[in-house]
Image 1 (cartoon, one colour):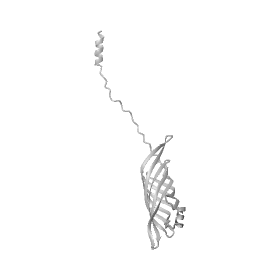
Image 2 (spheres, rainbow, N blue to C red):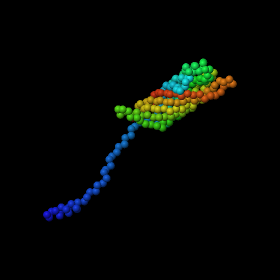
Image 3 (cartoon, rainbow, N blue to C red):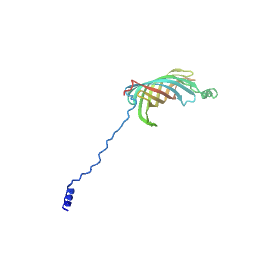
Image 4 (spheres, rainbow, N blue to C red):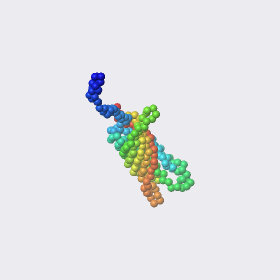
Length: 217
């Protein structure tokens, strides 16, 4: 019975350990590296192109674009294009049977200085844990086009603009698609002489971008 008071006193004298907040768990943030870095690299883009939305003239051709990327998302360069033009059946019917006055302006070639920005970059997860990195860009340019009609031929001032998408394939390659428009000042024959008329068309282009020099690991 004498031990019971001593045990009670010893228990009361034992300091209570305050429970603090649980230790914060270590967090790791993983940021996936872009598979293709563009800054300070030269992009060479050979592509094929075709016109869209024109019921009278069908255009097919190819081009070459060279762009130097000042940084990620900003580049400057040159774009050269050659096109062949063919009249559609609607054009032949309109000219022969309806006697429509259609100006069949044909752009043969063009050269333009282009600036491009890429404000959107992202990635999409595919089945099998595969990630596809993509980039959306917009561009605009000024230059000249070699055009001709049935009565005139010459070099005309040209304005071009478009939007596109790149899908990165590796450190040095990307699949590039672009939809854009060309607008130029054509000289048209009229009964009183000639006049200047704005002509143009929409086109879609598809090619493979090559980046030089090779990417660094």
